[in-house]
Image 1 (spheres, rainbow, N blue to C red):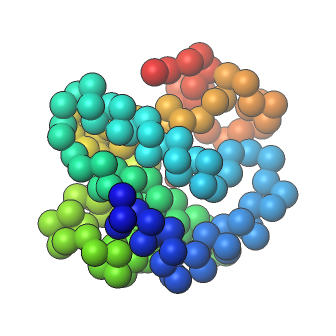
Image 2 (image 1 turned 180 degrees about the vertical axis):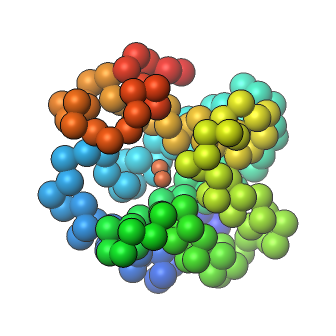
Image 3 (image 1 turned 135 degrees about the vertical axis):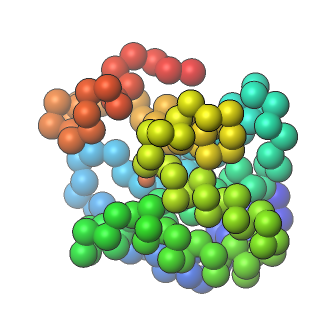
Length: 160
Ligand SMILES: [Fe+2]
Ligand SMILES: [Fe+2]
């Protein structure tokens, strides 16, 4: 997991992460923090094993670490955060030793992580979309009624 640790230490990654933390200090809804990134990574890796997609573990974790990394831009100027994340992820991936081919797969999953059209696909972006959504415990969230996620998107019961 050397490359994943390189992402965690990457200067641009840390800068973006700090900005998200600042923006979400008082956020009562789901945060886009390390707990979320690790939940998504682990769930996506489980789906990867269950569905025998054979994606490398450090590719799954890199996608999870980077998919929401542009979230602060959405707070700042309403740029959809999957687009903002695509602005920062390529540099971070390159600096952390990911190949062009690996980056393309990661960037595709980031680009599609809010597109429910891909949810049923037997593909990396398909499992990644589902893992991101499954990571949210709407069924036990005290702010669920005020959350702007549509009811069909919310996990009102446990999804595994
Ligand atoms: Fe997201
Ligand atoms: Fe997310």
